Amino acid sequence: MSFVKNAWYVAGWSRDFDGALRALTIVGETLVFFRASDGALVALEDRCPHKLLPLSRGKRIGDTIQCGYHGMTFGRDGKCVRVPGQDNLPKSAYVDAYPVQERHGIVWVWMGDPAKADTSKIFDMPEFSDPNWHVHHGDGLHIRGHYLNVAENLVDPAHVSFVHPTTLGSAASEDVPVHVSTSGEVIAAWRWIRNAPPVGFFQKFGGFSGNVDRWHYYYLHLPSTAVIDFGSADAALNLPEENRGEGVRIFALHFVTPVTEDYTIDHWMHLRNTAVGDHEASAQMDAMFRVAFAEDKEVLEAIHIEEQRPQKRKPIRIAIDKAPNVYRKRIRDLIEAEAIEDLGEPERPTFVQLD
Image (cartoon, rainbow, N blue to C red; front, top):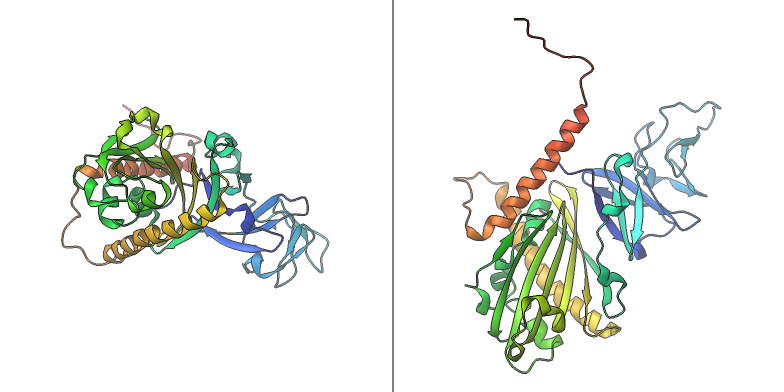
């Protein structure tokens, strides 16, 4: 399976990019990034059209990149501006330029047709700009595995009880049903665990002395952005689902970026309505998240290894797989739709039937 190209993917955090040339691979394509003199980010195809040396192995000259092999130089729009030793610039002397946007400290790059790069499609949520919420950028989790496995893990509340028993889950949720909604553009899966001890995460950050009601809402935005709304409230409040903002609430955001068919980066961060402005709390939460996400990484990489081995039978599907199954089908549909668009309309019929 290939990738959805007409989409915004996360290249990293704004803090990761400066004036230096930085090479990244996204959906199988190699790019070189740098921050131009006006502060804007530039993303170009990382391959000189002459001898194919990566431009990231060259050097910046002002807001241009000079190839490190024969000195061909390219502007921030990808067009060649200099060929040493000749005055004419061949029309084919260019590299692709990719649309780039920065929002809330996140760097987004459009990997498809630049004419279709709609900035209104960039993921956003009102809590980013709400002073009652703390925004904290985490790390990039590097996983040797397929991005579909990584993304579907992020719309699967059922695994939390077994993979994260000391941090995000516990045995109390093992048999609690998972609810799924696949009718809209966003795939959702969720469940509530009522009147149970707080999990490790909220034992530390919730300040609860007794049992809690806790929730996990997983939202998967195509092609690969996941929002996990999780939190806890004192069980005595019997908090309605729609009022969970009154509890201790955290949004864990996962921007899943396919690198190749066998390698994925999960850029993760969180927003919270507790410990606002407390940077020490951010560091402590990061430490717990790293433990939990390392548990995911171990499972996902083991699955990827087994997927490469000969299979005796197809993997079975069970009730909790509804959301992941719908997700995979929608990704297939998007990839097929892009393939059909690339074919275009025939200029004339290729077959005419004469009766």
